[in-house]
Image 1 (tube, rainbow, N blue to C red):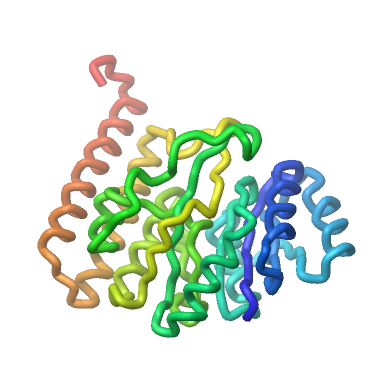
Image 2 (tube, rainbow, N blue to C red):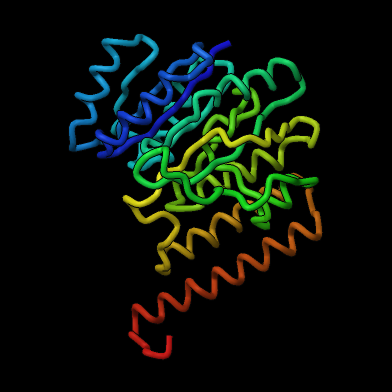
Length: 276
């Protein structure tokens, strides 16, 4: 059974080498790697081209001009090209531990009812030997959806393996600048029964830190998209008739809090009020 690994990338040629090497080094060999280039201006194409010549499982694509720029469109486009039974999205600077695919494939093969295998991540700085804190503060959950939206437990996108049949045709919203992975995971968890989700309590994915700002943007735009993602999820819940009081209450709290910071940021930018 083939895993389609999808990597959106933009100007990360040198870091991308390490990511590709971590995929080539997987103990499970039946995969295809689809790299979707979002109009990079560095040497990304040349680097991937060398890998393509060495390994037929690696394929390079450019984002079509009729699709909006951004990782969301690239991820959706990669899914449309994927031929595998299973899907994994990976960031172009992160690393897979060598048993990542093997452990998750084993779960999905042995449990036909399972649609998604969750997994866990650890941060690293500069190189994979310099490990830092865990990406999620908890591995335990009796209610995956509620704990996810409340941020009691987290799964990095690259630490999850999906059965392709469980995914929407375009799971990532092109209208979001952040929280797109959060919304995608939320809607997927909303659609799945608890028995269709396997929580693999293993560190199988390494998240790079130190060369970019991740989730540290406190602009009004950042909070606006946080608000929008939660509002979109609330609409999806209501559309499905899933009026769970605790979940709706939690989402409403988050919408109000993020709306406050959105307005606060706009006021600060507009009027430069010092007391903000």
